[in-house]
Length: 226
Image (cartoon, rainbow, N blue to C red; front, top):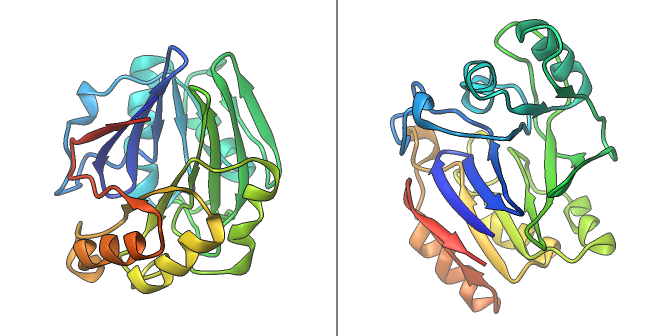
């Protein structure tokens, strides 16, 4: 299973013969590693519908035929924006969507969410099982104690945690979040894309390492494998 950071909160995850894309904000992203037209995907997973997460979802899904998974209200909006019959899955919190390669379950994230088209919805974290590993992408959450709950059911191998502050938790709260999630590997996201979310990712990584976990700070375009 490999994870490639494409910038901001966007990741390409490959495993089990599938390519999964999370939060494909590429067009308009000054730190994007690729153009939206160059990305392949079998499945697109969304934490929420803010423009810097929803991003190029519709264009990529139309081009690739990728299945789209989003919380129910946002999924309903996207189903209307995509051709009739396009595969759009609409779970709510606690809902699991299964695929040949694994599954994804939506869990709560403390944030706000209205899509650019005006659809109000709840933001989510994504617990993704692929290639025999379980990844928890926390989405744009603040720090809250329920971040510990997904590991009670499935051991988490990798935690993808926002660290930029201002719109999400900052790097200090992210260290606490990493302890709650209890994954051996932590990858930061949602930092340095714009001035409000600039932070010291090197210091964050050092704090994570002090706690006995492995921090992997990826530059846009970089990949890690597990």
